Image (tube, rainbow, N blue to C red; front, side, top):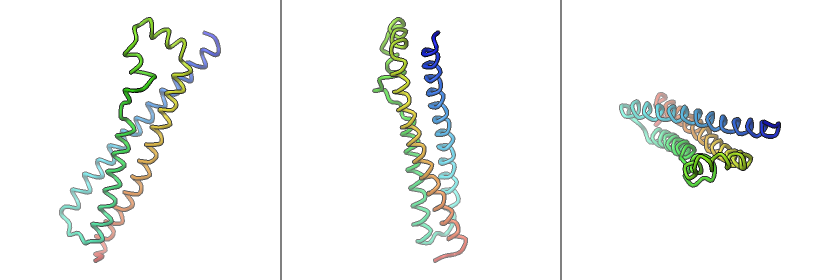
Length: 148
């Protein structure tokens, strides 16, 4: 294997590893958001809630639901893609070998764009989760403080 081929293979492996890392982070954050939503609902349904608490807490919950939506969007399969699984599913074994040998750089570029898109959605979901969590903490403090 020549040096350029080895470099392309290493770059391809790196991009695929980054997709895996991003999907793992997404799964963990989605589980966390789900647990916060479930826990908040469990605690809040038994408390006397004032209007400010409902407004602040409701906004926090809405942001967490939005974050969950972004997380699900980031891991949504793209069956229209030109690279990876959808392409390989349409080719014979011989065609796959030729496509990999010929288009490894194009596959790296396509997968890199996919990683950037996934990372962008994940970053936005983290921002919404932080903001939603802060609002839920504010709602809890309003509840504990007895604000009317």
